Length: 145
Image (cartoon, rainbow, N blue to C red):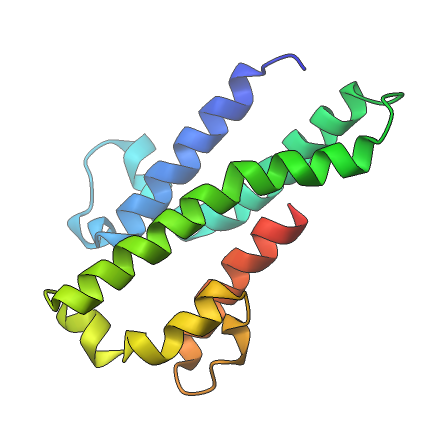
């Protein structure tokens, strides 16, 4: 598949927007008009990532049309691209929780949540609704995009 520079540029803009939104840079009022417009629309960065991901995946699959077992290969590639990092993060957070250095994880009672994260059932975490929505959306992206 050919690499498109404009997709990388859009990814960069989306990342900048998300970073500026999450760090509160909107209240700083950047001098540059470009940075100001990125900061104002930064909350749309996540949606832009979804659109770029869908477009990229379409291009990737379209370039492989005619291959045998295309869908099976697609899911195997996606799994091995995403699962190792997911499990690394689970193990890292479990280590942090067990060592006890992170107040946020203690407050969340991470030990109770761990089975849900390990077995992809985190959307049923009724007790931690905000967390389950965020993780659930990430899971939807992982599975479908």
